[in-house]
Length: 464
Image (cartoon, helix red, strand yellow):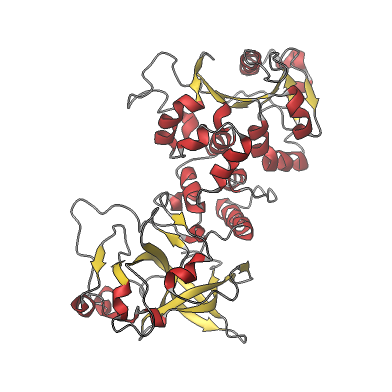
């Protein structure tokens, strides 16, 4: 890790920042890049670097760092890390190490200096048109992990490098602007802070990144590694979709969180004038006329509407459905897709359309579970089924779980959300006529027909 001396501006390499940081400490700069940033190569000749247009930012950042003190030594902070000039980008190995370590570096910093070069000091930050709300910094991909990693140790600086405020006092406004839970900005203790981050569902953390942009498309995935506590090789040129798929595979290797599969628009609010959503299966053809889509999302934008999705423990899913425990609760990657054991039910007896229930709810405390719509199964020599995910997912809510011999097995469903476009609509199913008139193919959704099935959820090579 290269650091700039805030007095002499000389670069120095530190081989083990965690061991060194407690004694010395360092500031870290979070900012949006300009056209004339000072690079690592420029820093090798300080006399020349000081004549370049971008030097003023380095100088001001060092001066800002010295305004704050190391809590151990009680002396002005002597070292600063700046991503523009503290990474030797000519070395692919050093660049990969820096990208994989960056979240930890922001987390270990004594203070994070968030420089907002487009924000005025004297303004009402709460106002809808404030420069703080509209800052470009809130829209960039890398600044998300910098915001999350630094927790309560961020200081926000205006265009003139004066202090605007600290993350703890700005937490409600930051939550409103970024969607990141305010608790992330208010817990100074490192271990408690990281617990707060990693306890959020995968879908919720992904939603924080929706709409953010990066200069290089692959960085949309690489900038999220720390937020999910994963590491992977950096391969510029692979494209955003490939990088984001690799990120999701790494997350799957470490976490059983089913919410990673819950993306799309099914949870969006209905339009002001909702149109009829339910028709006879033969005429609606909601599932059979769509092509298979990837089990995994192609970018964080797919999780825009998934902020409220809550993961539940995978071990709780069979208890919730009155099923025996899964024989193989973990899931793995294969050459075709994800091999996973899920409760499967066929929702159309004539066509190969299935519902796979996930250990995820559409919102905290909701009685609903999220189900993937699957189709076109095939079986291998071992009896494992391969399913294609169809366009959208739906939700099922249960008022209570019943046994197989219950005289009315349908009443375990309180309502079903069967919307496959944008809005959600709730259909009470305790009345048998609803099934007959609107959703005849859903009569099979009885507890005794749910079963664990070893499946391979297929991930198409070519996405449509």
